[in-house]
Length: 122
Image (tube, rainbow, N blue to C red; front, side):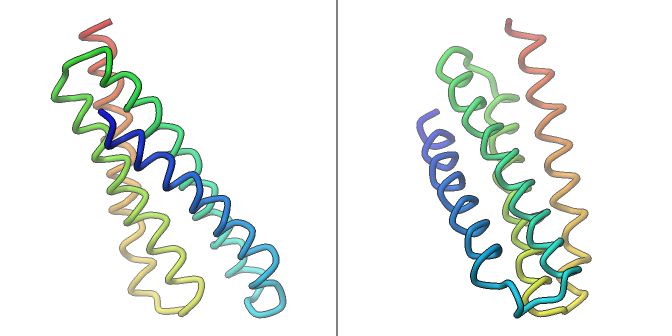
């Protein structure tokens, strides 16, 4: 699916840009703890950017609803997991940290769906 490839490319760009911003623009402005949280958000965004790209490539080979759902779960996971950590590290509002596990569950669901689709169709 071209959409997952495009979302992967956009998220890859954003992960690199946000990683550089965290390393250079936020140093000295955030505590070490909050910089670590920012870094975790970048790391998980990049890992799941790769998952989006793989899902997009596999969608071109396989027509599977599970594969499509896997891609959406990876994207939702990036928004909820990494997005909530970015906001939390900048604001310190714990409300955003409480959203993070929902994104983690979306990541897990994406991996299960991807695995199921691969086993079923390859």
